[in-house]
Length: 216
Image (cartoon, rainbow, N blue to C red):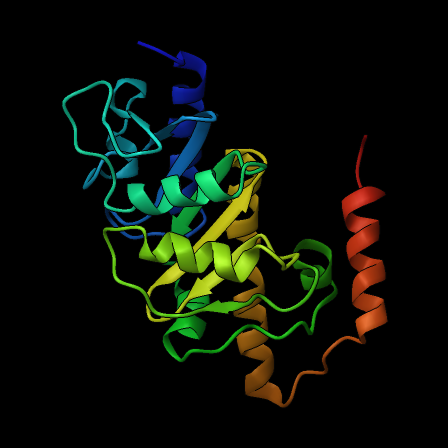
């Protein structure tokens, strides 16, 4: 079995999806870039608790499955397209988390009204256009939306959430944070009209969080 440590990491990270209420049943997937030509990704139709290191699918970024007898996620071509066109990305997460997906269902980006949003996303969480499942179309829309945007998350219209990161864990963090702020901003709109943060404050908060906050 090639890449055993990365496979085990992906199994553990998939278990975080239901723990954080980001997926239901077999929905959602996480992938990891192995190198410039290969990815590991969740097999299609398996629940997170049924995944094993051996079940993760190794494939080229051109779509060729290299090991195992399981079919890769139906989003494999989307992940591969993102990896090919965003070489700095090492992990991708896709969820149908309910609050964030509700924003996607009505075709609205999530406005930047929280310091936590400025920290993690550097502004509003953008909305990508509708694209069919199963090919590269979603990947093209993710890249188009995020390539010049500080956000590691995009809401895909009528579909769900895609997040990116230097590592799969970093992409998972963005997915957890996306759902958290989607819920809070939704609740804020029930109380009134949330106040968007000033642009200068967003930039300062994002810089502090990305470059100063935490342990180095």
